[in-house]
Length: 354
Image (cartoon, rainbow, N blue to C red; front, side):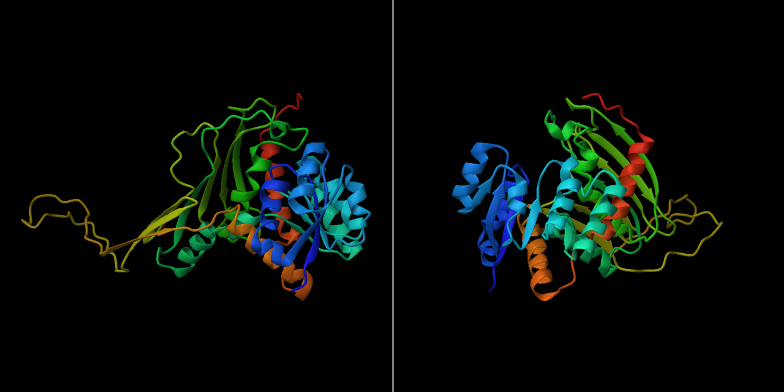
């Protein structure tokens, strides 16, 4: 099997602990070879040279000057995704960009156009779309067992406090840009609506040292589609689910590691009546009640968005570059996600103070 040579720009939490961690696995080593790493911090460069056995550079432009790389991973600060991705494409490199694609749809369009001009592939690391729990949720919903979905509640919450660059608006930080691309990509996938949904939103700063939001509430609606309630909350110390879905014949509750769902056998509802309902004695008033035949199931999920999902993402990317397989994450399909984020920021303007 041909190995593709990879260059990674950045050895932070994503560059090393997600992308790099995958490339160090057996599945990663089977298809890929990390040939070069660019990193500003000297100690991290030295560690990269030891971990990957690769060349290391302080300046990413030296990495881009190489002609032996099949693609580069842009795992830099969020506000540099656009300029560095364009530089990489213009240097003749295929690019995997970390999320967020950008804070602005105009920048996304510039990157897409740069890829077209260069004749290169650009994709975005939205691996949560193939996370095991989300794949299984889609399978259960597609089975029709739960009936018509009415409401989808998504919670990426917990009790957290942050004070790093991800809390800076100037660096395109904030929970909507950092955490938000994962649940919002999933929400739009489940919404299955080609147009722009209606959006109600609220952003707040609760447990953040910076000037960016750490709380986000989005409610998405579209004609004939379920209501989607998406929340990222740093002050939820009792968050006990990631997904809660209500439908006409059942419900689903899921975390990243466990899915529970219940549904009843399809049966006709009694006909409407204006007549009073009585108990078996024929006189005493009764409330509408019936005995439904419920089925309950539960599954434990193996793998998560940070181990199993990268393997699926990079297998597809490898097959795209070597065999022409259809790309899993097409950047054109992410423009609407970014436009929704732009709208949410416009609805909740925050002053940049840092």
